Amino acid sequence: MSSIFSSVLTGSFSVGLYLLCLLAAGVCGVITALAMSRESAVSRSFLISLVVLPIIVTTVILMVNGNVGTGIAVAGAFSLVRFRSAAGKARDISAIFLVMTAGLACAAGYLAVALLFTLIASGVMLLLSRVPMSCDRFLALHITVPESLHFTDAFDDLFEEYTKSRKLIKAKTSNMGSLYKLDYKIEMKDPEAMQEFLDALRCRNGNLEIALLSNTEGGEEL
Image (tube, rainbow, N blue to C red; front, side):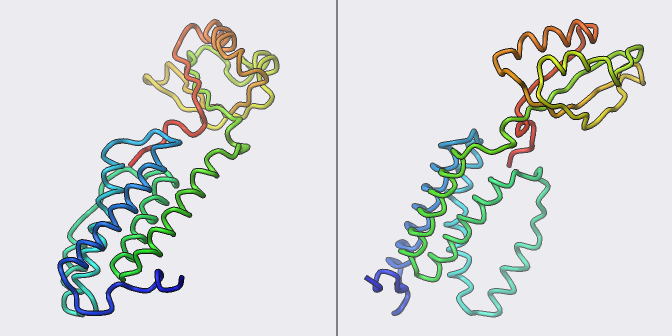
């Protein structure tokens, strides 16, 4: 049983072993991509990156393979790359670290360890995504109001009627000070009453823009 957790890179390195390591890394990437797409909406480019990244990591580590000069050259090459992409969500960053770890394990020849680790980590991600969290109850409410409306207590009666709790997160001016944009964190008493709540709000704010969305939406994706 313990033999399956031994490194396959014990003898001379060959094309067959290299392709076997790449295949295992690709399988780990596919498993992670399927787990990510199962419970959340992610872009096609991100899923492709999850499949390709462990293959790249495996090849880079196999190239270095204890050679200090090659390691310095690879580090210098990667230092030229500057990432200007938007910061991703914690779930996406965890998936990237997952496939990178699997790629490192494949480069060391521990293919069974890489596959088992990927299955366990992906299973944990799927399991935790189904566990209800306290933050799932909250919604983000964005209201635009005219400058003539005293927004401090303008919606108190509506909040008392439709929400369990509310908190003003941010208030800023817009359109050269003629409008205010308010960001609230709220918890609805009855999720089925969202339309009635929005109708009451738009009658109060002069039919200006209102947005009600999940507290986890609106963040930048990788």
